[in-house]
Image 1 (cartoon, rainbow, N blue to C red):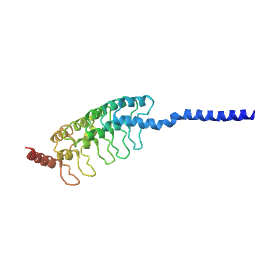
Image 2 (cartoon, rainbow, N blue to C red):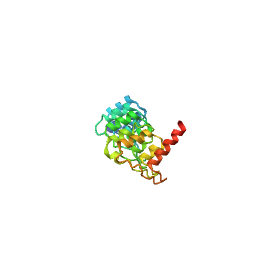
Image 3 (cartoon, rainbow, N blue to C red):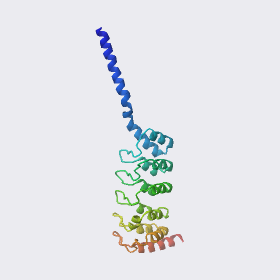
Image 4 (cartoon, rainbow, N blue to C red):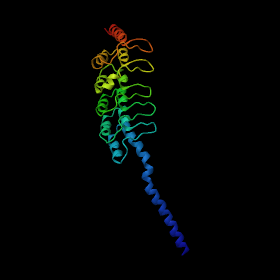
Length: 228
């Protein structure tokens, strides 16, 4: 009789242990699923991304660096993933990695991913958030030799147009300074056309003392001399 009781107790203990392991396995697997969602976004695996999303993964999940799936998809140029994310409810489209502070919109401009830039802009991304180094989307757009990014940003809101004279704290450059130094007369023309009422062509660079007018004239003629 004692043997039966001991055997019964031993069996019950193992049963309880098995039950607890079975019902905690889902909880233990969640961090792995979280990583897989971000991994799928970073490599553009649409099938895997949809699978993990269907299984209940939070669309705003972040890794240890504060990076979201939207950021990874924007950085690596996967518009299909970006579209899926933007179609979800309560997406934080301006979530940025803790260290850089660069939003998905910012990184799309920086990497030259025009389709994703348009998707994010049309979805209502904040066009004036600056990075940890106080660089704005407008500033990074002025680095392009085309007006593909600058013009849509200027047209997005008056607040953006009013920020054209904000200077980089490290270089002292405004958007006009940057456009002129890149030799992008297209960007200079866009600035004067769409933000002419706010653009100060005589604003002095705090580092080198040059004005926007001087830089535009100088680089325009230098480039003309070199290429023509």
